[in-house]
Image 1 (cartoon, rainbow, N blue to C red):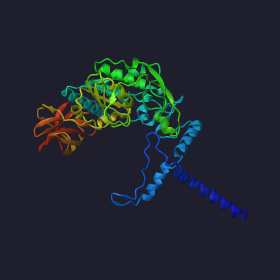
Image 2: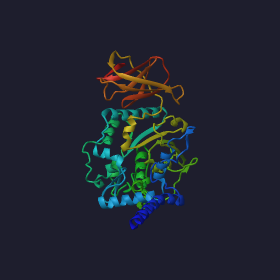
Image 3: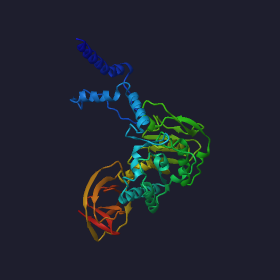
Image 4: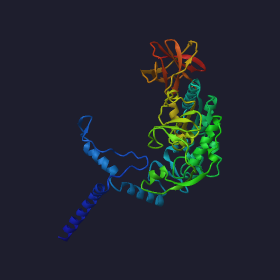
Length: 444
């Protein structure tokens, strides 16, 4: 009898514990996402006008992601794992030395485990050169810069189990291609490494506002303008790092970072929800020039610096880069900022812009190739978008790709494994590449 009472009490306690998360969720509300977490959406009884047969599994997924106390439990588990085992409980975060955290997506660059191919490097650099050429045709200055990965600048704080590659990095190798293509490039490595104190946060994947100011000054100098923002007064302010939020979503640990010690002088145009907005426009009295800047999350801080240096500015996070904005924004300066870990995207996502016409003699040489060509309407007036995959063993690694459209030759943006071109529609299409240094027609 006593044993039956014990089992009944145990089962009742177990069921009560199962009900606690649901009761807390009803009382306190669902848990919110931490950092850049993507949580399951609320279940829908119908989808696309039909009964959702997965509504129960969707409800389970929603509850798993939103039950009250979830973030606190994740934080407690991560804190214990770090303290006892010196390991990160988050696959997105690397637990470094002396309180430093690193973004796991930068590990491939650090170890050299995913080097860009020579073709990728050429495509990235040559596409930037084509963008620079188009900007020049619009009387627009051009500069490209890459924000270094945090462990590129501070490898001494990486865990010992990760070995830094001694081979040249993708960024170093791309720099050589950019010089060959005569792309105006602002190299931030010498500027950032010359500082006595860190310019990246220990618990964030990005630079501090002072590091952003250094990048701003370097960009302006590259553009032939004066840049002295980093010489102004900076004051320490607490900052909650994104990596700390990923690892400890309910944590409140902050670190000080130097922030510009005065109010900003620019104004936003229209509603701005935050620095992560896909499109931000600004105006600044007393300045000259109009800026179009394509940026990533490193531009969250940098866009404020750049906005103070131009009478008007447009900051876009969209990729592929839409160069038609040069005309709509009436920009006289084009800046492209991309973090080191994403350099390969330059070889995979060609920009939206008309392809330049080229004067080429029809080649006598032919090479065998496998080609798949797609034509579709585009947003560019009078242009069709030609995209294709191209496999040609005889093609040089640094070969441009040309399309002859009814006898008129245009140069496409090369991609790793293909090309993209915006040009007038045509009935007769031929594809040319360089093979052993000679222009050749691809025979499919």
